[in-house]
Length: 161
Picture (cartoon, one colour):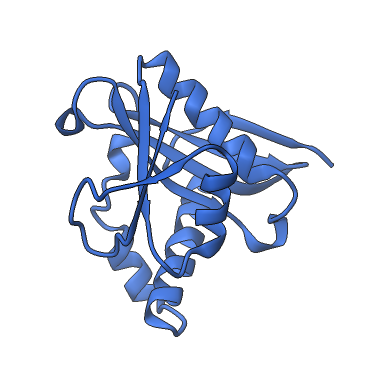
């Protein structure tokens, strides 16, 4: 089987299911218990995913064979300054971890960012998302000082493109 990564609307059926699984995992880890369907719905309501379309961003879905297995988003943030964007909603379903899909997601988002003229891609993550932190470090992201004080952010990374 091989990976393919392509731009897709954040609200397509596959992208919506991936975003839901992403939120389920990060919320469940944070609360140290399974998230309820209502909590997942609340978290997804007004989560800013509408920015993941041109001209404010992009969303990509990775497929392993024919199965939707991963996703990531790019948000162009004027507040961060010209040439800066944020990487967000990076997720690989557990069954597909360790197969190279995470690196392909990052490469796809970085390519999209360059096309928008982005020179600095940054992100935040949490202590408990150790797989994500390892992925970012492996692919050239370096830990940087905090660039915001949002809830749930405990580590900040950036990569010059």
